[in-house]
Amino acid sequence: MTPKIVPRLVLTMFTHNRCQLCVTAKEALEVVRQRVPFEIKEVDIRQPGNEKWFEEYKFDVPVIHANDEFLLWHRVNVDDTVAKLQEILKSAAREPSDDNK
Image (cartoon, rainbow, N blue to C red):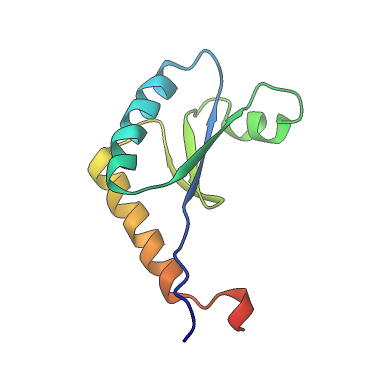
């Protein structure tokens, strides 16, 4: 019997240190995480090496990606974000893994 692979969610928050909306978004994401588990990493778009993200998101932080795909920007609506993340997990559970192709 093949073990069931549990899909994993990794959220990336594009931010910078003077972003008040980012503080609010982080607080909302903690509420979301109580309902849908995920890892989160932050990318400071103003740091060296992040020029690509700075050019793309300099007027739009916070921007959040889920598993390297755009999820949302500016404000985190808890219920909407939970629903989107649950859908991503369902889709990932239905897709065959690279090992099974």
